[in-house]
Length: 410
Image 1 (cartoon, helix red, strand yellow):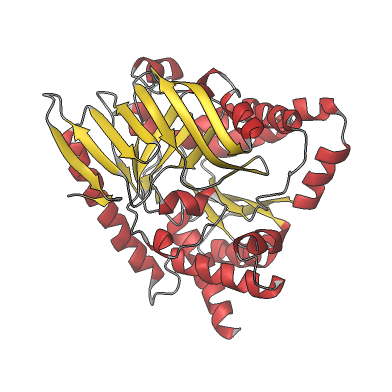
Image 2 (image 1 turned 180 degrees about the vertical axis):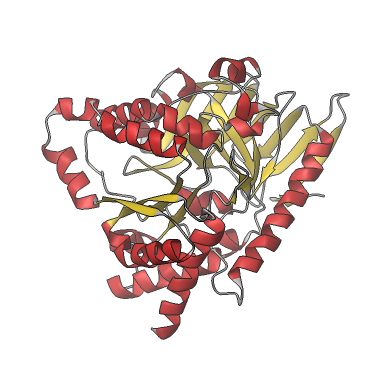
């Protein structure tokens, strides 16, 4: 127990010092579920100790969310509190940092009418569009981390009792975020450097296309002329280094919006909108998703793709070696933050502006002109496996191996 408290404190410290990298006099906004209360108190303490001016905590509760979906009238799902959206925008404009803590139950909205979920996602996506743009252009420092909830832990470790499942999930999270190491902060600095080395190599190549091949996958992805590969750490508008996702094992960029052709098959379940989508296939023509199939969660996937015009296209391609620590744990987390870091993945929806040269300063229209997709949604799904090969094609048509048998080939 003593060891757990130490690890919890190290985790809170990492979230504040490396995740959002809070500065003296800065405001911090924490979004968190009630299940994370103990951890949030530690994080708030660490933030004030690091010199934060104010820490605002926005709580949410799975049970209240479920009640709303079961009992509220239909019109409730078509609106979103504008005071909240404006508040987030204002805090971002004033230089706040944003820490999001996820602990969601993957089956939270099982059995709920998909139309309600889709309407709610559209309403919040539209209202929060400006704030999302700030996040996707790295205007502010932001970070996403996870803590266990009982429901999530039981989903990941169904054979264990409730208490044991929570302990096992904590252990898995501590391992994935390097908390079990002597000096997690230093370990993250080294990890950041390793990922940057991969990104630097890919950036030096200026590949025109990537060709993915695996069972059920034969996909060609063109890259915009000014694409940039990004690894791990980011830098906000005012020069503040931060780590957007913890854990992270990916090197990523954006595809050319209309340059994706072929078929791709998922290799892990996708938890979206409180439902699981499993064993699904997407077919692309000139960037657009023209066909979808799914063994389960078809309606949820269909509504995700139909969120808006941009959700018919991809906004991110990410490379993650199959021998990454999370993949080697052989745990399916049913949580994108972890599962995407065990597997090559793609994202339906908006591209990150900073994946384009000069993108942080571009308007929405300029981003689109350079081949970036815009949407009110951004949802990662996993496609990597030990059987995946990826080739990079240079401007002169030469092909070079990037991945072989699921791992880096350089």
